Amino acid sequence: MTDEERVSRVNQHLRVARDWQAAPEHAVHETEDYLEPEEYLEPEPISFYSTFVGPRLWTILAWGLVGAVVAVVLGLLLPPSYKATAQLYFDPRDLQVLENQVTPETEAQNIGTTLVRSQALVLRSDNLLRKVVAKLHLVDDPEFNGTPQTIFGELAQALKSIIAPGGEDNSPAAVEAVTLENLRRAIGVDLIDRSYIIEASATADERSKASEILSALVDAFLKYQEESRSDVASRTSLDLQGGIERLRLNVEKIEQEIEDYKAENQLTGVGGQIVSERQLSELSTKLIDAQAETAQVKARFDAVLAAKGDLGQLPEAVASETLRELRGLLARLVQQKAVLEAQLQPSHPTTRSLRDSEAKLNSEIKAELTRIGESLRVDYQRAKENEEALSKLVDAERERLKTANQAQITLRGMERRLETARQLYRDADTRASQAREQAELNTANVRVISDPSTLRKKVFPPPTPLLAAMGLVFGLFIGFVITNWRLLLFRGRGRDSDVVDYAQY
Image (tube, rainbow, N blue to C red; front, top):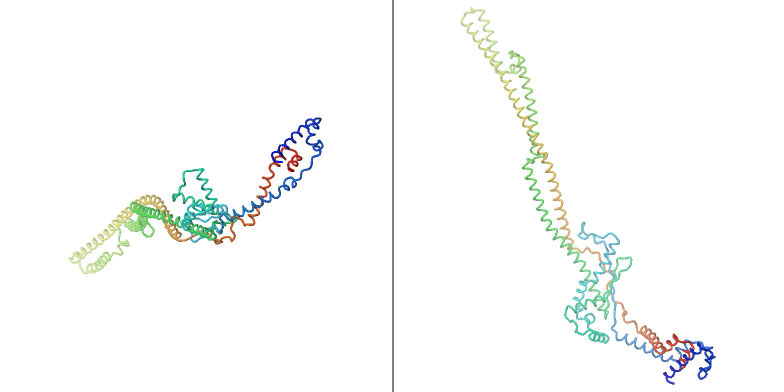
């Protein structure tokens, strides 16, 4: 019996069964040529093995064997892939080589984690990948430049050319872009939880190539870290150099302004004193001396006035050598006159001559006393005028000092501005020197804690036994579905007894 006859018979059975269920009183007449009604009343239970597997066991096993063989063949045809891994430790706290560094160290934990994540992205950046491509000449490597390596790749490329005709872009830029994209897929970067460690990996069809790619990537990254920090320090140093020159000129300008302002307002001085202060101090001392001298001269002049013409008892008269000589001559003359008057007549010429001499000496003594009194008056007048002149000078100097004090307030502001400019200049010069030194130092605290190494076993395709097992399971499943798809359809649409009846044919 053919399959078509079997299907027709089963359909007839199903149709009769439905009619019998709808009209039981007619079921006997319509089914007596085919089946007895009691056969529908007592359906046989369905068995999975006897229904789906048993009759077609060898067919399903054959499909499983075919699947295992196909999986093993595919494993042999597909190019192998080997994986190299390396671990890098990123310390967010850079090496503190200098007191003030261009790039400040990171303290916050979340910032450090973000920094490590950023470095993980840098590992797969185009700049680093281009350096790896250039160093290893990957644009000429069929694994990365897009050249098909297997028959499957050639079939995929042919299918792509059919679907999207127009030819491929084989320009150097396009080949480099394809190489970069394939290399990026081959590079893996994973962050180890709760640490500052990054695990980098590279996959290639050869063990040595995977290790070379990862080594080139790690070297390029370490060199990039050093060059980037050195470049930042160099650019900072150059920028600071331009600023230092401006700051130096600003300091010189302020210094000149201060000197001009001091000269204009007579604020220059010696020994910590400005000119006005020193002059006022000197004039004040002279004024005090003049006042003392005036007081002394005035006291002597007051004594002259108090003597009322009797100046012989004045200290100046007593101390005068001229008066002492005149008084000595007068005393001797009086003594001689007394002797002669006792011997001669008062009208004697000698006696008259002595009296004339006595009168002359008295006149000279009086004139000398008058001269001493006039000298004291002149000295007092001169001392008084000197005191008044010094007093006026002191008052004028005090006014100038007030003006100088106001100017000093402005001067102190200018000096503070000068000190600020000098401090900025010193700080900038120090920072520039440190930046120049840091440009020659590598302060990035990045260490390779696990050198690039390739796994001994290939990561793809899986081992042959595992491929065979997977192919066997997949083949058995495909064989079961292909040999029993009709039974599965009947089970979803009819009764189990109908499926059993169909499975028996």
